[in-house]
Amino acid sequence: MYAIVFTAVPKTSDRQDLLQFLMWDCEVCQTEPGTLRFDVIEDPRGDTIYVFECYQDREAFERHKENAPYQKWAAEIAPNLKVTRLFEGEPLCVLLGKQLELPENQT
Image 1 (cartoon, rainbow, N blue to C red):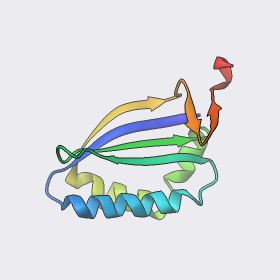
Image 2: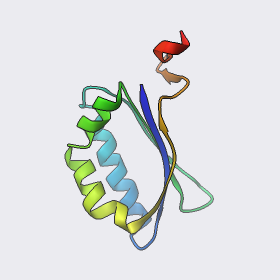
Image 3: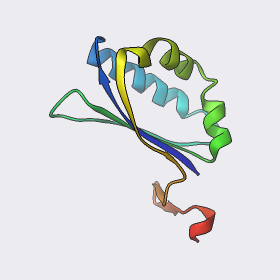
């Protein structure tokens, strides 16, 4: 598995526009082979948005970067945000629905 966790805070753009974009990205991710999770969490106390992405492997993430939302993210959305990458790599465990998924070296 391969996961990314980051925060995004709008610098100049409208927060609602960011949330709408992330919802679209989440919808597109549902059709991507190898995308296991795409969670968007809104901090009710401020402007911070938390994003958790989990992929079958690094290659699935690289394929994700070819989709239309990621291209728009890189070109138009991210430059207007303060993005802080909190984690990138192999997670210890990820709960997918009711099934616990562990990396191969953890089983």
